[in-house]
Image (cartoon, rainbow, N blue to C red):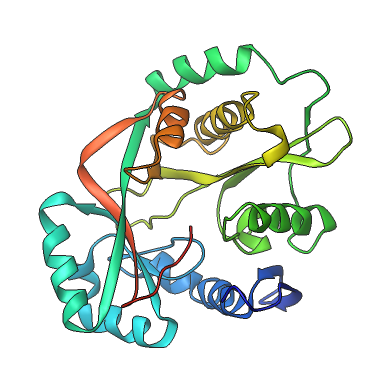
Length: 279
């Protein structure tokens, strides 16, 4: 995957202008996720991880369907898996030659998040930095810039349509430096459908900060802004983010926005044994 050239496509899909960005495989997965949006929105047990298909209730969705998608896409998301079910998920996947990487889940309700993010945002951005106006068009140059920025900082981006909210309410926050170059990004949206108990729970992530601007609080600021938007603009009930157990800086960043570790669940990405999907 690392050897493939980065590509960009702009395609009319069902009336939506969808910007795809990344390697050949990443674009293939973005297109598959966009094409399956209606299925993920209407099928009990399915959910939308953004860059591929997924589930928040494997037994309800059915393992036959999960295996079918895994055989085709070689990647599948498991969102908010109850801790007591983790071993069962690992076992069922390993029986078919797949493995899964899990992340801890950090969560906050409106009250604690608003208290924490207000404190962070009140300090404002460093001198000369400013926020870019909201992304509105999937194939716009600014959307492509955001996708390229995420990719250059090790994050597999969403499709343009996901970033601008054509597949449901979403918020993409972008900070520019003194020269007008991208300095930081973050994104929030609703992954779960109406059949899920997590229907009004937003997910936040895709947080990236350019190496030359790290250490000045941009990650803390942009994460707080994204979390704040999830409540004020998207009207979410709670917000969660995923963090690797070993990623202490990211843990501190999400905690500064009022999120706390939820020990009852984990979220993961299943891939073929020996593979790994970088999130």
